[in-house]
Length: 218
Length: 218
DNA sequence: TATCTGTTGCGTACGTCGTACGTTATAGGT
DNA sequence: ACCTATAACGTACGACGTACGCAACAGATA
Image 1 (cartoon, chains in turn blue, orange, brown, yellow):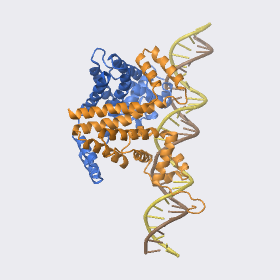
Image 2: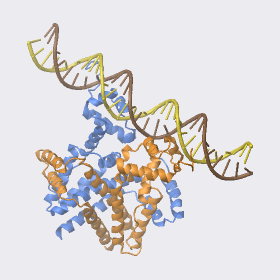
Image 3: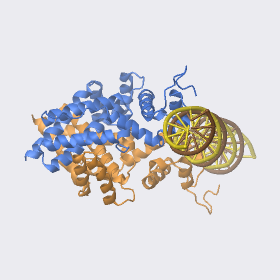
């Protein structure tokens, strides 16, 4: 091989593979992620990848962990709700920027970065002085909100694929009205007038955080 | 073919295919669901299935809709929170009984049964007299809770595959303690002592419902 | 320098999957 | 008795993950 001669040709590394895989999935989606194509993108043979990842599933676990590493942990000194809001907003932004990641998040084992992130959230809730059961339930509620909300939001955003949203909604709505689903039709109409999903994300997060605070004092 | 003679051999039907596919996925998981195997189970040729379903993806959409049809809608006369609690409990039970369904729920387009279910929830919130923004956000919060919580719960339950939970937790915990993640370690320990996930499901649901009620009155 | 050893890269090949396509069988209308 | 639409089926193809065996190389030992 032309090592450090005319052709530099970066050495294959687990990190380089994961980064490239994340970038590829960001553009083409995780379904289009194929080992042959990924290797080609890296200028390597397909099977060379398997020197650094055990198999495709394990590689995707690694990709999710790379994404986990981009999330800001809650800050130490702040009031617990502000700290959680900031960290949740960061997680939300990260998951939105890697649209495939939220769905994978729910089905893959956590890697080291994600474990650290989990610990940081639990630490924040614990040191806020919340009652232990509230920490326990609250952790589930918060993480569920972050990824659950994002999945729903991205699922909705996926619907208009290069189609005029108005046309799509109109056709969709026609079917709903004639099928006697007026409330759903209204909801779809509401969606059309609501472009700021970040707002809804924090509105619902606050509902949860305030509920936890209140419940812990009770 | 031996039609109505000695060999009865049920006619192939979209409904029969979907029911069999749901049953198969319930037992073996959705990843093991393969067209050839499914056809064999139905006593049919593989390609015969394609006379009744467009392709595998569309078939899975249909499977999710079959599952959607099993969920009880919120009852009409009851106080809105009781009605929602009952319906959410039904949805939770259905999704737990078809363990593959929650993950598919988030990535497939809704079919007719699910659209009707969506409409029923929106109707309940609207007729409860909640403010329109609260209906809008509340719908998202409630549906997110139902499927998000269930996904997390099932993901957790999946971990001990025929392994003694204690052993697994012990090994896992060892790694966490030595990695300086005491809060996560404590959380895992808490999980071990908590077998009633249904309780947590409704505790968190109540937190959301009460938050919506309060927010709508404000 | 010469040899040995472990690691990384790679090409080939196999088994599994979804499904396109062309053909056959059957049922219902005339 | 014929015609036509639909369901059933077998074969075959391309895409995919990856097992396997070999080649190229780096560093250690002498």
